Length: 406
Image (spheres, rainbow, N blue to C red):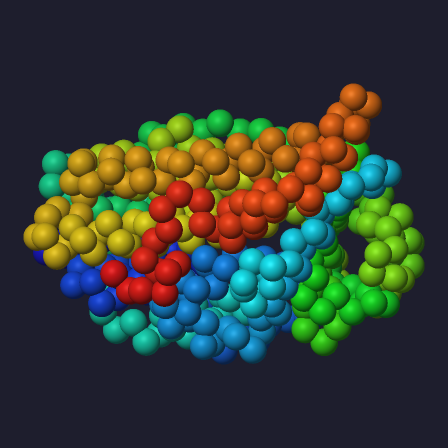
């Protein structure tokens, strides 16, 4: 007999794992299908992709019980400095002026994956299929039939609600017939750690230029995470630079606010594109995280937005379960899509608009950008509004972001 679950999650990445953890005590029967499960014993590496977690995200991870596994790897973001090369004006934000200890924290992505894996191992109510590959879907009126390929052979399970958390190239999205809008930004992102001459001590920099944004994020042991975007036609030349030449290039792009940059770690490169699903939902199916939207990493909003997807959905499903309702009901899914609209649309518009406005070489924009930064920095209340949205509190926050389990 085919096992039928209330919820089947396809994708055990950062967002999918977060949703599974949130649903562990929900009373729903939940299956998690993972192509390759992260190993809780994996240790973070010195040089890897780093994530700037918004305050709403750090609070939510505390609420889920994940933060206790992660706190030792986290570096608080206490101040933020935003500027543009060759232009006057800067936006300076200080958490203390907002009555906070930090706006969020920087964590290695691998460390977050390990922390989620450690918490997930304690979720005994989650049925895990790993490694497993999604082969096909057959939607029905009461459930969706899901064909999986596992090491033991092909198997069939069913879901009253199917959740696609399987990334930018989502197979759930494709099999559900949901189209996408795609933009190639023509940029490649280089990521590594560096050693700044002046310790950042909780200060995060975002600096813009005609060739793209550059960020410097505070890390443990006086190191900093460098996030450097270059035009894709130049990416091969930048990748071929030796460490000394790469540092000189990064220094020219970022400037000297942190002093001389030295001791670069291993570099990785990532093409930047935006992929946005036409719909968040289909019959008995919902998309979250990068399967729903993959956005420009400017402002570090990607994972934070995906986590808010997952926890808004968890909150909706828990309320539906307590009311004895159907987790795949069309009304529930439409309500979820509506609940995500303000945050999703606002974040998509912000990330796309910011990269186009802040990195445009148009001469007429220069004085306008400088004036805008001066106003944001100088007028009471404007900086606080930017800070609140950057902390992940756009629209109605989830209970998790407020430190409460629903």
